Length: 67
Picture 1: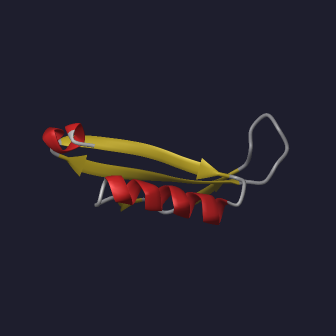
Picture 2: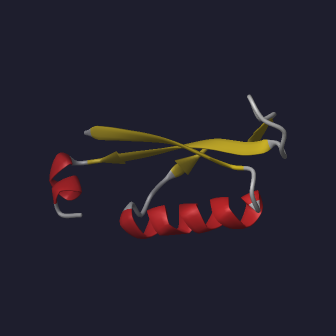
């Protein structure tokens, strides 16, 4: 088994952009486990809070080679 962990975040139209990113990943990796979303203030600049979450996909190595 291979575990793939991804961190995803956005502070620009986060609801739309994160959903589109997850939809694209679900087309490649059919089953994803998705964490709750959490907010984080930007660091080093002024801006909207980031919406962040983590994903995990567990797969057989041969499945990954076919993508």
